[in-house]
Image (cartoon, rainbow, N blue to C red; front, side, top):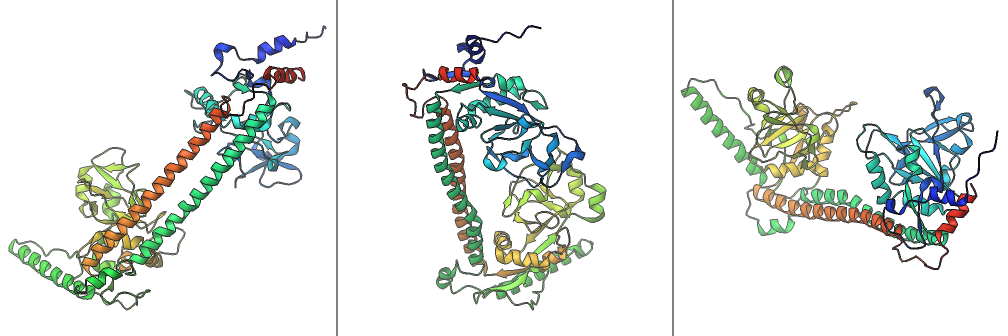
Length: 518
């Protein structure tokens, strides 16, 4: 049998170069557009069976990189790393430094095409069948090659390939025919060095932003802690010494409740109706436990059970009638909607108005304090939305309807380190955290005079709003920084970083060397 005729360099160049009409954009005169397969080897990953998987690495096993190990352009170790026996790994499936790994098969548009370059700690490991490896020729700068797979140009190509099908696949021929901007070798090195330097500065800026962001929760806690020790209103109290003490205020609240209830009983008797149920206590409870902190003289301590009516959706009425649907008349408040200090209106479920009418005691009309009392987020509190809509409790959220004090004050207090410490002390120590309605009622509350409650709410809301605005500004800067990275890469692969030297030998000569060596 005659030997297969070897292709000439001209034929190899014709196959390797991207025709002018197919080139994505214009590059400098001494650059060329090439098909990626001409300058890189493309290798599919290791296929393995479940019984070939090991949980730990040893002398006879190697790590298999999967899609989850590729995060934000970097390879990372995962808690669920997979290891396979060395004897099922081919030599070309062993990772080399500067190889590029990308997710080539997945069900997710967000994951398909995610790429990362191999760093020294992953050399000699391997990769799975849903990942593909691109190994640049030794004559190509590996850093330059790897940066391209983080660029918006590459991501745009992958996005177009992934449209349509539920299972997203990048085939070998897709990568072989991927258009790649190839500059002279010296220019590749200059671009990679400059991108490295710029990215290092950007990453340092991001690190500093993250440090500041991490301090926000501490700053928020500090504001709330000072507020409910009376420290934020110390100077205000000096100017308002005439205030009725909180102890006297609670006695007045109890007296007013007695009077109102007596009027309701008298009206019920006239109308031939049964005596109404008491919603609120009309005797101030004796609290034997001392406050955990030193309080101003005009403050006192009581419990939620005196300050509010606490209820939930539960029991026979819940199991018989309650059925959540995607659409309906009355939106339902679930635990996921009650975040600490914030009502999140997303992924809302509904019940019918008829069901809500039957379960009147667990209707929510706005301005109540909401608290998660079982499962994830137990102890989270926020205000019920005041949006002129009726809402309804789900079976894991309680409503706290205050009387005689400011609901916003109680809401903020329960978010504070002080309020949370009292809440946590009442939680059941079981696998699933929970609070009963009785334990919620027993939670202790530091109570200032009503006028000071308003002042505390005003100060705290202003400080927290300022803090939130700072956080949003930093988030915006963070996003812009990520955009700056893409802008740098876009300029890098167009030859616009200010590093191009027109006297460099034309990239076609480099390409010829690569093709001759194959």
